[in-house]
Image 1: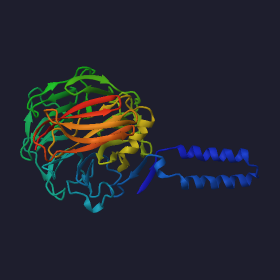
Image 2: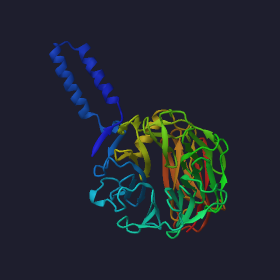
Image 3: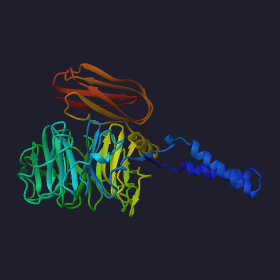
Image 4: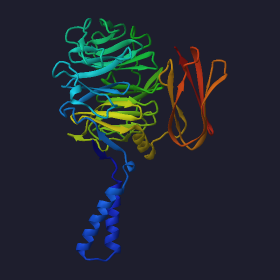
Length: 448
């Protein structure tokens, strides 16, 4: 594996030691150069890797000529969809990609989207429609019934066991059978570039030339949600942390809005005209943007108000790094590049860079639990602006405390805890976070 450091501090240390030696110690010029070289070697040898965020290339067996445009996961299996090479698989959370595990799809096919349905079934959206696999990608079956001829699948998302497809010919739903179109409220034949499900119940579709549409009934009907957007832009990518939405446009920058009260506001501070965002992701306490050009990867911990480059160390293409896809898997983040394979970093390394830059929220932030609704467990993420005694408790609808998840002093920064609900009945529950002088509450829905 190849390690690339994204921190330049070691070079400043080397330079400082070299100057210190030249000006404090008296020696012949030859001795100065010899000792300076020894100092340089020593610094490189003893500066620990943890002094900087590091990107690890994980895809030597994935041909560099295939841009990686999408990811999905099943347990420790990570699947990467490429343009030109089909789907690749890693069975150890991205630790290695075996050449023998190239999954057989038609030669040269472009995979634009990949998702999981029924727990272990894969679906791949391609320039030739949709394919399904029930054996972790060992074999694939094309299922295009219901699609108009020539349909290109651009995006997938799911609610329970229904899969939604955004395509070049509109919006469709399926349960691994024939595709059913949904046109009520959508312009006829509108191309859909991106899809997201919010809080496991609502759908947003980013269209090609007509902005954003919202459906609250599994895609049966749609309504435009373009207040604040310039005209009817091309929407390239969408993301949500459960409470906040982000949408990036083809030529008008990035916008944010609050879920269920959508009024878009531009949020581009820290981004430049060279940074064309092509993908968005969220870990439910921050947003990550993959770009073509510039740093290649940006992070915001304040809902897009400010962006910080976190792609230093990623390989640069023409005009900068090219990140086409982002996947968060446990404590790791994976990025798919345009011709340089898959790279991995720890999520905490990226978020700590953002916090050090001063772009962290000034107040307590409590995120919506994810997923919601949920059946067995959910993650509650929050951000602490300062060191404080923290209490996070769960209450039922009658206000009776049923669980205490956190009780003690916590450090500043992003924190998360998993709540297990296996023994609780269905219904609405509440969680309350107190941290020093701050307090916030949220609501969750348990459905077994």
